[in-house]
Image: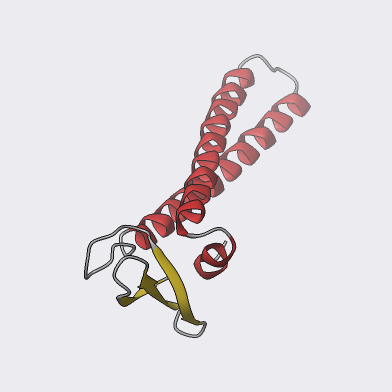
Length: 126
């Protein structure tokens, strides 16, 4: 979910929490794919028929492909959330994640926010 849409819909803290939960779900999928990959490699020794070995090779490729996609997605979502969270401190008073969205420039991916504590405005890059 885009940062500006998430802040408008849920607020920054809920958006950040959802982003972290989604990224860790991808990490769990990566672990499941690794287990499936190890199981498929282990099962390959039991098969003597070529059709079974071909099916097992397909299972290895699918598990590896999904696992690679999931780990990349995990890292992307985690880094995206952390990048936004590192900019959520008010530069004037140091209050964390207590701001309202003032405006957003869609071309530059920059959000203008205002602190609820001291009314200072600053920009957050998406």
